[in-house]
Length: 199
Image (cartoon, rainbow, N blue to C red; front, side, top):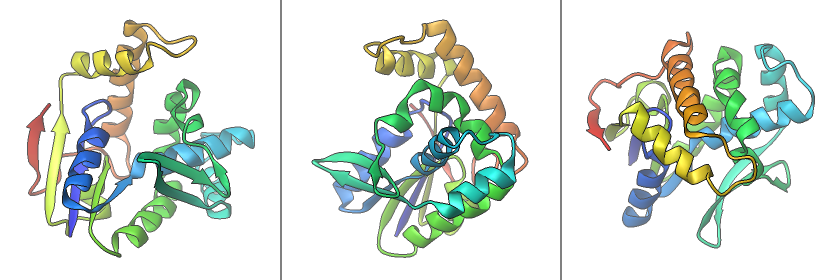
């Protein structure tokens, strides 16, 4: 069984998906972490993040694994655990640009489908119900007002060194929404048959 949870940044997808997966005894697939891992790898290599072919090449040459360690999500790039690094503001600032490349999405969607083909999963992202798993047994679109999403994200980042201001987080949320909804490949949409939930 596949439960697909899509929606914009800060709507609570990861929190809800993690809880639902634990409650049902399903695997949890945070698809955004895959794009974050590739973005980090590309940044480390000094790649042109606007070059879709170059970013896709980097993805094909690397191995990204998602898992759970001591009850917390874990992201592994090749053999390096990068869970903290992929959540840093500099990665968050570029992940939408990187994820917009059709060449990269083709690679990452293949990874995601390989995972979802085995067992029962709750997956969250931007295009799970619309593109990755349109056959999902349950589709949910989580959303919330941009100001509320920015408030949540700002609270998450408040204790980090050099944390952005609320206005910076709000501007980033608005820009990210525009990129996610406007990209040519797998834009953020409410999938056919999805239940819309305002968090």
